[in-house]
Image 1: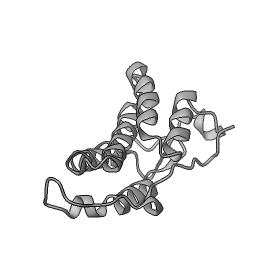
Image 2: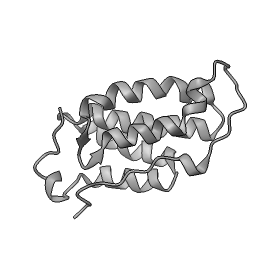
Image 3: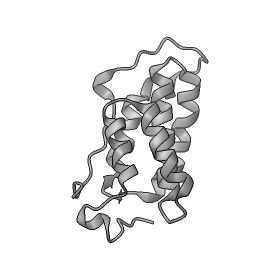
Length: 136
C-alpha cells in the first residue's frame, strides 16, 4: 500500500488534503477533521483509510487539547491501525515520522491508566505535516 500516486509524485495533491493539512499545522484540529472528512466521504480509492487515519489523528489531538484524555487515548491506537499500512511514505507524508511525533505528543495520554488524568498538552510536541514533494 506504500504508493505515492503518480499525481502526488509531482506535488499535485487533492485540494482538500492540502486544506486539511493547513488547518492541522495551525492546530485547528476540528477544522482539519471537517475538511478531511469531506474528502474521505466522497473518496473510494486506495488512500481511503489513510485519510481516515488523518481524521482520527486530528480528532485525538482535538480531544487532548480539550482535556478529553480518554477519547484521545481511544483514537491513538486506531490511528496506528489505519496509518501503519501506508508506511514508510504515502501521498508525500513520511508516515513513520508522523507516527513517531504523534506518539511523542500523546505519550503521557497512552501511559495513563486513569479516565481523567491531569495531563497537559505540550505545544512543543504537537506533530506537523510536511509533504515531500511539496505541493506544486
